[in-house]
Image 1 (cartoon, rainbow, N blue to C red):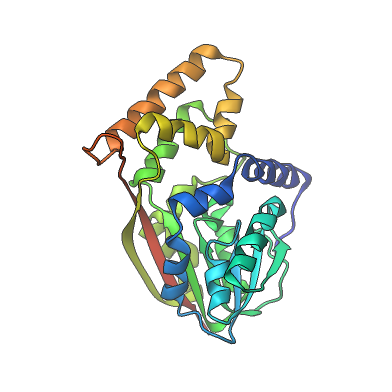
Image 2 (cartoon, rainbow, N blue to C red; image 1 turned 90 degrees about the vertical axis):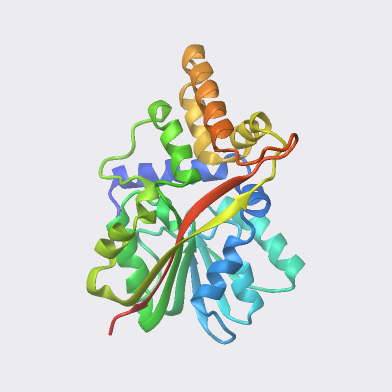
Length: 278
């Protein structure tokens, strides 16, 4: 388990505030509800297993895992997201444990869980090697590690590229989140800590908004990283206008729908499963 320095703690505090802003539970439920069940199925989660969902948010994967009868812990740096998760779990008629935890320093013993998974969550921890090491550490030997990560080349990866010129500087030593969607990067991170490493690229269709302009405003209102970028430029009207322009151009270009009043965005992700070695 790694320890944090005061500077690290400042970064964690900022990250917690970022994900607490907006309405990430709505983003997960309205844009990507199928990803959680997809990951649970890929991991083969079943009744009686002890499962950890890292950077669980409001439980997009944790709640479907609990539906199988598994004993699930949903861990996230941002406990502000847990109330929405508890409501969703109650609606599904399941119970699980919600605990604050840092993906880079998980508060669990070695080999505690049969399955450790993360659905577009752990990829946003700034230090990828520390995160990968923690995922492996808390998994029992022979246990399953499963991830869904946005790819650099896909829709979300390009969303971050579009916001990049306007974003605040990343914390020292941080790696861009979409690198977790690169196969070689994942191989390098896990090294010989895992066996049976399997990766495949898939798409989830996002078609929530009627047009690119409405979708831009959706991101600005609901998605923490987008909110943070706009906040960073709030005192510069020219930069804000340029960001608005570039963001709308990006969403217009990537819209695959030719029908008026409909959008269609194919968002590529990397589905990763592996076994802990030993």
